Image 1 (cartoon, rainbow, N blue to C red):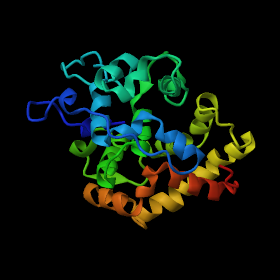
Image 2: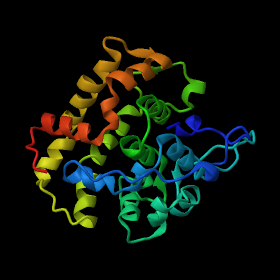
Image 3: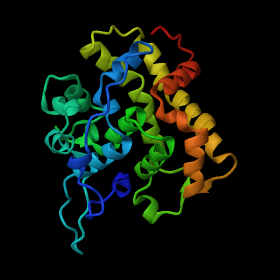
Image 4: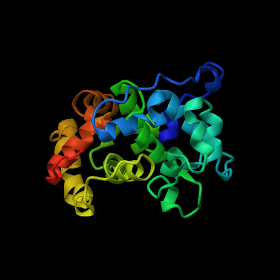
Length: 264
């Protein structure tokens, strides 16, 4: 994944992140049971632009290549992320028994399912940010582009409907608005899960996710085309397919396709 390319570099023309970082007002806990729980998470207290920048600032450098070029790892640690996200909303990042720490310690957020403990996936963080951070659809579309395309806008003029990263990334979007939030709300929010395992499995089964991805999301972006120029792709996503950035809208569509009755 190529998310680092979209973050502004601190070359002196951009204010240091610490100088502009501040918590947005806490959102009002309205909506259904899971919307209210999601409002309690700190992702809602930051813009997607600042969140992406903070995540990329927290990425350690890879060992220098043969040509001496420096690349970033695809993970952050709790401590490095806290060093970038310094505001009060993120104070629980390094508190081991906090809901935030437990969420980011889960298999879905750990690189390779937690093969090496404490490595938080940059891709997973940005997907969660795209669902919950503040920001205009165009800003989020550009961040999503860089999650999908290694090298981002600098290295690519177009993006394919069959991009190799779309399937696993879209799966994460679906998991984060269903199973992952159900589990976290049950374990940390005292919210008894209203759905049987068989129902949750139906929400995330291959056919359900594939139909949502191919027939609802990709079709409204690409139509009969297989590739789009970057500008057109961003324009299509921000207008026709921005519902991917709404946890509520994603859940609504998943429940309908899985034919699971909404109980929350």
